[in-house]
Image 1 (cartoon, rainbow, N blue to C red):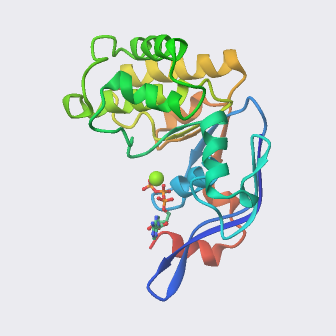
Image 2: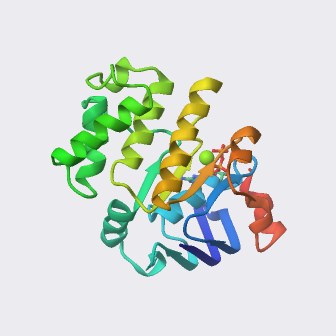
Length: 229
Ligand SMILES: Nc1ncnc2c1ncn2[C@@H]1O[C@H](COP(=O)(O)OP(=O)(O)OP(=O)(O)O)[C@@H](O)[C@H]1O
Ligand SMILES: [Mg+2]
């Protein structure tokens, strides 16, 4: 499902490059549920964006759901993401002019289409995460935890093979977080989906089948030391 080899992603900083993500080897099989951990600034978000095809690495092989993302242009990567990948961004990225339901349906528009089936699924998902009475609220009228749950529904609405989540439960109280994680893992298991979830919460990580610490994936310690600056 996921196969990375010698992947480096750096960002320009003044006249030099800062390495944000440096991975010798990463393999995740179809259906695996993986927690991705590592200290702040270690490159977790950067790695998820590379897996989603939002960022293209400087070099290295990135194979995700059957496509070599390092060889595809931006438009092809966007199409691939729309069809196969559900992404929950660390900063949620909901569109402010649209309601909760419309934001979830926008996810469908870039995937399988936003017809009646998608609408029913969007409503079901929102109800399942406890937002049945918030379908027509805009993001500004939702709490941060509620916005985060809308973002989770948007990631799930296309029934994607791969779900990438960047601290999706960071703003939930423990009971709500557990309920949403239960739902996520149940839907993933039923559909044989692959899940990669960034988390700082050991209890959430323990619910996954496998934990990957980003620090263990690096090709070299020296370059990685820059990543935290
Ligand atoms: N657009 C950018 N331009 C320059 N440097 C960046 C950019 N985005 C991230 N970085 C740097 O890359 C490194 C990795 O960032 P990243 O956001 O992937 O970390 P993270 O592990 O997700 O951290 P956190 O746990 O705080 O979310 C950081 O040191 C950061 O300063
Ligand atoms: Mg991050």
